[in-house]
Image (cartoon, rainbow, N blue to C red; front, side):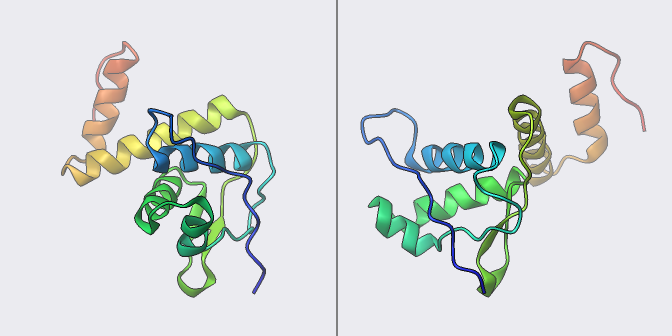
Length: 130
C-alpha cells in the first residue's frame, strides 16, 4: 500500500468559508493543477483532522464533497484515492458543479429527466424531453 501524500492545506479560522469547504477547495486545486495525481492516496480522515486541528467530521465532509465532485474515491481500507485528473480548472469546476446538482436532485427524489429539463431551461432553451 502506498503512503498517503502530504497535503499542503490549511485552515484560516478568520475566514467566513466553513473549514470543510476550505479543505475541499484546496485539495481540488491540488488535483486540478496536477500536484495530486490519479491513484495518489490522501491522508486518513483522522490524520488530516489531527494535523489541521479540526474535527474528523470536518475532514470527512470535505472528502465526501470531493467524492461527489468526482475527484476522489473512498476505497475502504485502502483509504481515499485521487481519481480526478488535472485539466482546465473552469471545465473541471463546471463538472464538479454538475455532479453536485445531479447528486442533490437524486437525493431529493428527482429523476434525470427533471435535471436535464432544469439545465435546458437555465441555458435558455426549451426543456429537454425524454
